[in-house]
Image (cartoon, rainbow, N blue to C red; front, top):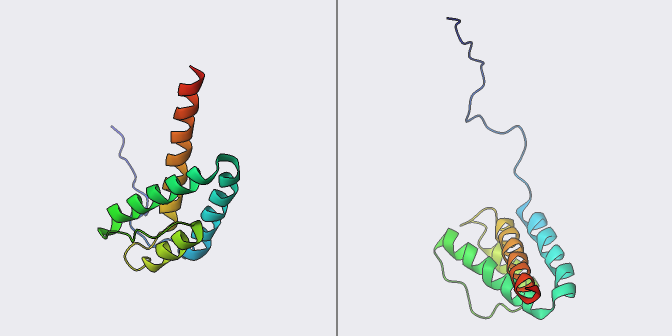
Amino acid sequence: MTEIELSEFKMFEKAPYEEPDPRALTEFHISIAKEVEKEYGAIFTTRFIEFALQFLTQKTGEEPPQNIETLDQLTEYLMSKVDLYPRPYCAAVYAQIRVEHEAQQILQKSIF
């Protein structure tokens, strides 16, 4: 039987690059949502905000304020929680996927 050689690879080494800028990535994903809103309308923004806030609530355990109505307000709220959850852009990505999935389901039901 041959002997297995192990490399010097260590699973938990620090990455050789810095973490991405959370504000830049959050604003980028919110800008995408603003473009998609033009296609789906205001309901898209409403659902997007709901899903993003649900995601962040699960990550931080804090209840969000009820007065967030625009994507710009959402961006500022997500950035205000960066100390509790350092990747607020994940909430925007999650919300985008959920809303588009929901829209596809509605579209499929209306076709059949």
